[in-house]
Length: 399
Image (cartoon, rainbow, N blue to C red; front, side, top):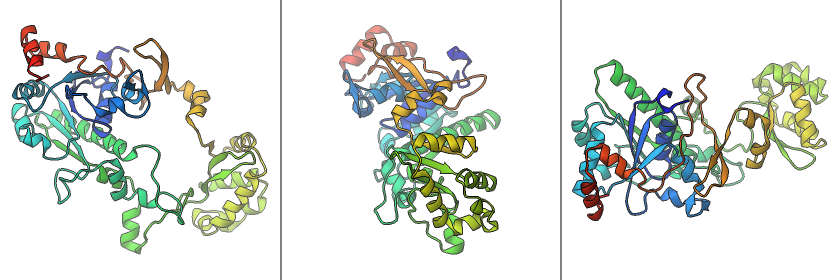
């Protein structure tokens, strides 16, 4: 599919992002056709370029996080650099930034200044604590958002300290909320008068918004949800079980009919027919008994047999996938969730596929994360700068 036929084709996005939340939001927009111009410092650019596993000097994560983006180097501390930003903003639809609140204002690039240049601008601002409140000026990363938002408190086992997930989930959740907010703001602009607005996403609030029934349960019952290990609190059975060959299988049989099928598959007709277990409330009251029965069964069967039996019984179950499992899995392959791409030295490698899948206007990978400043000259030329002016800007350290 051509870039022009993607759903966000025609939108221009300016990204003042680094590391995770801002760049991930802009990446989603780029995957679905928006022109994303990533503004980077001439002095090294986004630190993500060097994070995690580095191949031939560049992070493999960078190639994915910045796919379909253009890299333009601009020194925001130089007046000439800020003038370039003014020109870019004048023709932009969305600006994405994840600086600490106040940084852009000190540079003369805050909302008041930029919306005066382009009243239709949508400004997506991602920060630890939002643009207001007593903590607004404090630095906050995803780990802090996960902690303050409630996720860390409920994650882990009750006899051990809280644990984190193995990825920067707080940043990613914030990015997703940010994309939703930016697209809603564009819809408002389209339908209600043509003006832009600020989309203010705090990392802790993005995580907090995912915490299900945490708030009303505390307010009505004084109930504080604690860590419960691998079970789904209040919903039974849903847990991870160990097989005879030492593998781990997640089994979710919390639907009434599914629970009965599970018990029959385990040879536990007594539990399948027990009227006390016919609904979730009854099952949850006897969760220890049920989990012991399931574990007793999985402990005497290998993973392959457990999964085969549960698949035949139409009980939701899965091995706990490692990335190696994903590379060999027919569902991943059938859904094209592992794309092939080529590194600058010609080496083939795999990258994640695009989510979500649109039937008529799907997203795609047009190119991998660019070299630092790869698109600076072409972008400046489009803005009307001559070759001599670009050379002068570069000599002055403005780009």
